[in-house]
Amino acid sequence: MIDMHSHILFGVDDGAKVIGDSLVLIEEEVRKGVSHIILTPHNGKGCVNLHPELVNENFKMLNNQIVEKNIKVNLYLGNEVYLGKNYCETIWQESFYTLADSDYILIEFGIVDTPNIIPEACYEAVIKGYIPILAHVERYEFLYDNKQLISDILSEGAHFQINASSITDKQNKESNKFVHYLLKERLVSFVSSDVHNSGTRGFHLDEAYCIVRRLYGELYANKIFCLNQQNIIMNKYFDSPELVCSTDGVMLKIFSRRSLL
Image 1 (cartoon, rainbow, N blue to C red):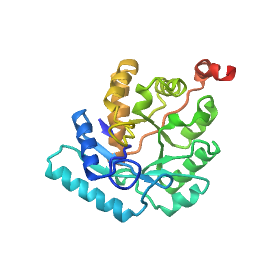
Image 2: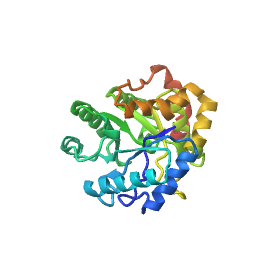
Image 3: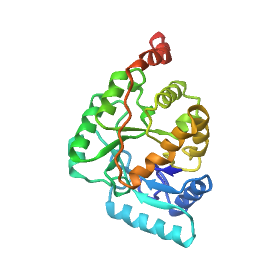
Image 4: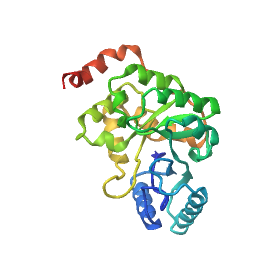
């Protein structure tokens, strides 16, 4: 497996605090079958330290420790880029890392932002030459019953990433239903850990892989846990999924309860 969204790089955001925390998380990922990790500290909202010099320095320190301890993993640098109302400025200023020095960028929005900002921001990113990946898409409740908006985002060339924990956690029933709708319709391009720590925001990638393989087949599981991630590392373009019109009934059935609340 390849983890393309993680907060393992220490001392730069709300993820790992010290280098020891980073090493514990990396060792767990390797033990559970991960061979490549893209470190994606926040860049913008929720970021503790925006200085690229510190990100670079800590990344080098962590890589040195990986070599010294002979941990069999490849590390790459990226960012989780927050895009707000001034998304054009953020995109064109290029004050962030792309994923593994590729054309792919991992983007997030506020959960209460105007929904229309997302396809517009994705369009702007594509115009700039990037391939946008919408992080943890299951967090955006305004997408749950909005097929048109889902289609609009994907039509701009964007990809959807979901967190492994949203597949394994059935406590949030609405989010879990939405995730499985996306998986069933093959609208997910990437599943990642979004791991922050060993406790409240852990790994879960291995558990999620087993669920997806059992419910949706090994070919699709391998694609969204590893093969698509390889495209990022190799900077290889692939088409974003398309929303098939015949899924109207599925959407209405899954979310009909929302209208009754």
